[in-house]
Length: 640
Image 1: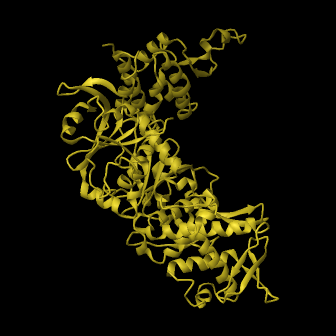
Image 2 (image 1 turned 45 degrees about the vertical axis):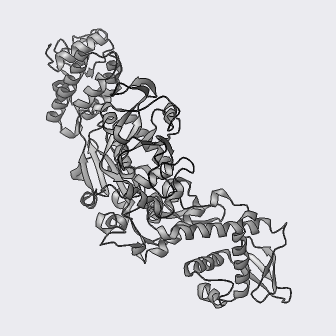
Image 3 (image 1 turned 30 degrees about the vertical axis):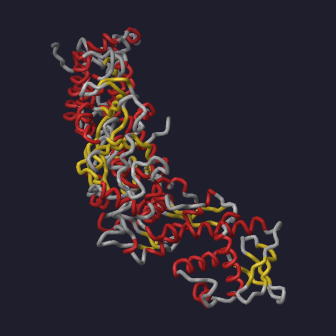
C-alpha cells in the first residue's frame, strides 16, 4: 500500500463553500503551489486551515480532475470527505503546541505552513506536512476531551462486528480527529498505528498464563539459566508510562549514546590501544575486556588492575546527568556517592573519556538499532528493542517515586486489544494486578497504587494513557457467568445484529437489486427473531455474514457454509427446535428432511420399517431459485 502523505491547505474564505461541495479547489496555474493538487492521492490526509484556525481534517476520495467550483470557476478539483472539528484550533494554540519540547523541529524544513515565528505562512496554498508534526498537533496535545473509560468490553453474538468496532475505537483513542467514515480507511489507520507500536493485539485462550501476560521465568539459552522476562501487559505499561515523562527522554537518549560508545570500546579493543587519563593525569590502560563485557583497567605505575563494570558505569553516568555534575571540576567523591565501593579513579577515567568522545560524536559510529531520540513518543514505539526497553524501564521505575513527573495531559494514548477475553482464565492471567486496571487506581490518577511483582521484585502500575479493549462472544459465555472482579472493572458495550448495516452495504454493490436486498433483510430479521425466542438473543446471527454477498448467487455459500453450521451448533440434535426454526420435514418447502423419504432408504429393510425412527438432516440447497423459494416459505416472507 502507498504510504499516506500529509498536507496543509490554506483555504481562507473559500472553506465554507468548498466544505458544502465536498472538495478543495485551486486555479490550474503556477501561483501559490496550486499545481500541488495534482500530487494528492486517495487516502492522503489534509488539514484545512481557514480564518486563523484549523477547521477540519479530510481524506482524499478521488484524485484531481479539471472541474468547476460553486462560483463557476474552472480549475483543479479534488474530492475530500470533511471531518469538521467541534472546536477549531486557533493559531495561538497551534503556536503554543509547536513552541514546546522542540516540537517545531517536526515541521517541514522547507515550505512549511508555519513561519519561524509560528504564524500562518500565507505565501502558499497547499503545503506538505509531516506525520510527526500531525501526531504532535492532534495526538499529543490533549485538544479533544478523552473522558472515556480505560477498560471496555464489546460483547454480542458472533458476526456483529465487535472486532471492527474495537479497531475504530482504538483509532479514535489514539488519533481522535482522524475521519472514521470509511471502513477501509479505519482499518488502514489501525494497521499504521499498530505498526508504529501504539496498538497491541492479543487473543485470550485457556492456556494463557500470568507468566506470559505479565512476567515470568524463561530459559535463557545463552546464559543457560532461567531469567525473568516481561510479558505483553508489563512492556506496554512501561512504554506508555515513559511517554508521559517529558524530562526523561533526553536522559534515556544520553544513556543509550553513552552505551554505544562503551560498546564501541569493547568491540574494537583488540585493534585499538585505549588509554584513559585519571584526574591526577596518570594514564590508565585498557588491558582486556571480560566475557561479561566489563573493562580491565591498569595503571603502568601500579601492579594491580581494576574491573570497570558496565552496569555500575552506566549507573554512574545516569547519576552525573541527573545531578548535572561537572565531571572535570567536581571532586571525585561523587563517584563513591553514586556507586559506592573502591576504584573511583578507574571509573572516573573511563567516564571522562567516554563523555569527551560524546562531545566529538562525529568520530564515533553509532548503532542505529540502539539509538533512541526525542521522537520515540511520536512514531518509534515499535522500534524499541530489548536493550532500549531496559533503559526505558529503569527510567520509569526510578520516577515512580515521583509521580508528579508524569504528565498524562499531553501525551499519546496506547491501546491493548484483548480478543475473546472471556475464553481466558482471568484470575490466572491477571493475578494480583486485577485491582490495578481500575481507572482511578492508575498512574496519574488520585488513587494511584503500585505493587511489587513476585518474579522481578520490581514495582508495577498501569498508566492512565493505556486503554484496554476486549471482545466477547455471548454465544460462548454470558456476561452473567464472567468473573465478578472483571465485570466490576470493565465497561460493557453491547454490539447486536443490525439490519441497517446489511442494507447500506448491499445497496452499494452493483448487481443487487432493491427487492433482493429487502428479501435478505427480511430473512435476517425473521431468523433472528426465532432464535431469540427458541434460545436467547445472545445467539442471534450477526450481520457480517451477509455482508459477504456481492452477487445474488453468493447467498448459496453464505447460507450453506456460514449460517447452517452455526445453527446446527446452537441446536445440536434438537430437531424439535430446528423444525420450528427451519421448517417441518413434512412441509413442501423446508431445510429439514427425514431420511425415510430418500430413495436410498426406501428398501433398506425387509419390512416396511414404518415404526422406525429415521434420522433427520438439514438439506443443503445448491440451486439459487430453490433456495430463495424455500427461504420465502420457511420465513413467511410476503411478496410485494
